[in-house]
Image (tube, rainbow, N blue to C red; front, side, top):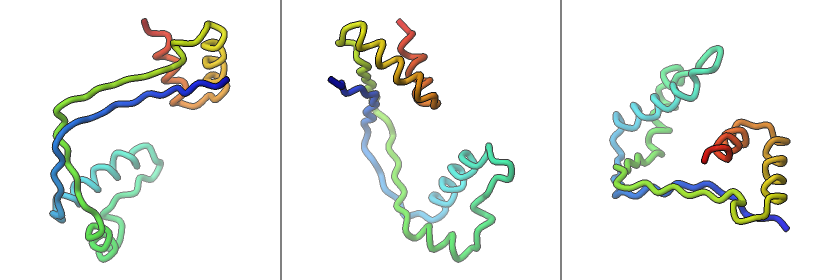
Amino acid sequence: MPTWNYAVVHARGVPTFTHDRDWMLAHVSSLTDAHEAAEGAPWAVAAAPAEYVERQLGAIVGVEIPIERLLGKWKASQNRPAADRAGVVAGLERRGDGASAGLLARLDEP
């Protein structure tokens, strides 16, 4: 019988919303730079046509949430017999992806 395993983080805070073009451009540019950094030829927002960028910024609502509290939980078959836990480990090892490897590393922690 399968079991549901999960990892979750709940962030609590009071959100604020903005339509400020400069604020959004700065954040979209920063996110793009971070996610493009590993590429051989990183793309930048400034490389897009100005009209396109303006149109896209007009469709975005900026959200900022100052975090007041973080609560993390995870369930990885801790409540199951050893054979079931070994099956979860084997399944994660077969996947071979980064997220599964990260979870496996956490399972080894006390």
